[in-house]
Length: 425
Image 1: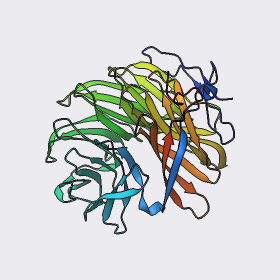
Image 2 (image 1 turned 90 degrees about the horizontal axis):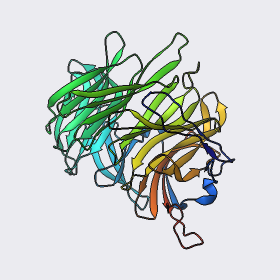
Image 3 (image 1 turned 60 degrees about the vertical axis):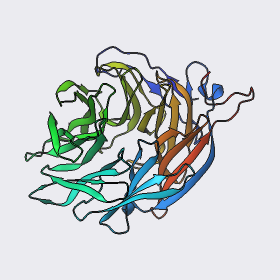
């Protein structure tokens, strides 16, 4: 038994009309089926090695991302709670501190990016809400020296995202809190010195989120997030939100994707045809707030209109996609988790999940990283050669509440005919 594919192309209506059924066989690998068994046709790469790095919850490991040079980075809290470390993941699986940034005003680090000059830009709320606002931006050079630091008069939450544009400037995306407790989505273009060039806002609701921002090949900026509210029974109902602006900040198009469920997008990537593929989770609207989530993919064209959409369905307790990358040949690399055993309300044992898909969402190969005593999920899957991939994951051990950072290399296996498993013919 495997993943039953029932997806089909859809028109311009923002509705779910396709389905991917997800079935888990014990703690083993998943497979798409419906034609021939994808697991039989292509087992994909195998785990060559895996390295683990323990940490504690207070370290705040997060912001796993790919840098402009192809490197993998994440952030963590330093031993000094006034300092933040940006760590590079070597292809050998070792961790190397790239920068340690100390700032008296920056509280928790919400997001960072590796800039083209070798430095970093960091963003997050200040330690206290003073008269100058509570959004802190810090630019450091490749030696770790602070080039500039600014505090913006914006009342923001933890949802902050950064992007460096082709002209050397930056884009800041955030959720702004209004006095009436509603929110709005904020997008600003910054000059290289951090001064605002233009800014714009999009109408929000009550429980909004900004999850990603990117520049498209035509120079436009696309914001990905969620907008929604809580009903009288304290149930969350959010819709996927997409908006594109031009280089001057003028809105090109704006889309709100309603599924009838609580939709939480996590990441998106641009495809060679100018479209976008979005990865995330679609949850039931539950009295317990979190609901039962199902991973999904949504492909839109350059105008934000549906091309196809696929959904991971009834075979698991919960599934989710955290990230998506597009390869040079247009294939999709996704990562996330599958939960197959509910332990206590919304807490569950989960396996890490990573897969390579074709440009139409058809599975090329997929891998499950089983853990019977941990809650594990994958955050990134990247190629490091024609035959090898690196995937990053995190896990929680229930005994003692310890956390683990995983670095795993996948290696293409030569099949019995001399070809490479995991590669499309």
